[in-house]
Length: 285
Image 1 (tube, helix red, strand yellow):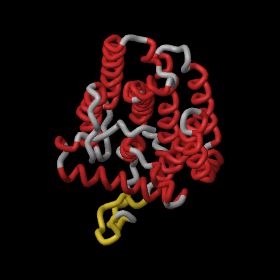
Image 2 (cartoon, rainbow, N blue to C red):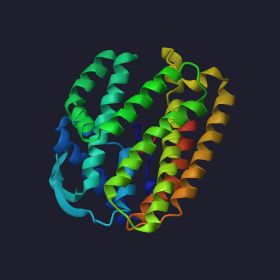
Image 3 (tube, rainbow, N blue to C red):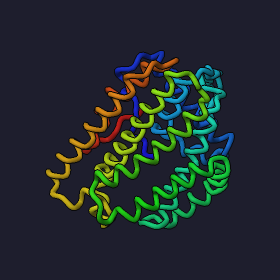
Image 4 (cartoon, rainbow, N blue to C red):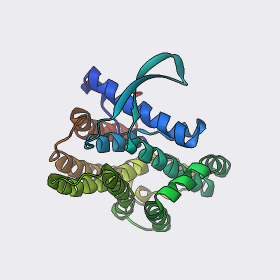
């Protein structure tokens, strides 16, 4: 994943920011437990949001503890300690990092890509063993995406990538093990929102990489257009997907974390979109 699905920190209460960071840190530590310390670099804001969204709907309250961090061993801070969703998203973070590294190895960063792929190979094998059907879906869609990139439109390519996040959400919903009647409606809403979010991430990443891809002669669907046309189309497509995400997730009653979900969906996504379109650097969180 890419790190674009972010909170807008100035608009978030300190209490909710602390909770958000506890989920981020909990995911980081879960990756460490399941894949080793170095692979903890696979933690992203995107997978943090998936973790937070799924835990927001869990009937099992996530355990909160206070722990130190390898980056700051002398200060303890709140960390989501234990939850089945954490283990799942930790495994998926490693798997996606592995596929990203494999892609780099085939493109313009072969040495770094091969090194990172080797680093994540063990945890990726574990994820494939635990979730064989999901792992196959991800691999198949990425293969199809790579084959389509030289000639397909931004919309078609984004739609393919959207299927990956939809599949990740579907598996996460199954792990929640909820069978109450309203949740069957929620499941459809969540999968549609996840698909739109996957499309949003793909489109925004294509915009963000536009200049570098032009310089390195890499595939990018927006390079087939004039700059103004590309930016106008990108903004339109991104806003449409933001509206889909908001429309579907706003219909859900959350067990917890609702204010953080609201902040990311209604403020964070548009703010990140505009910063990338304007060529600005994303702020530290």
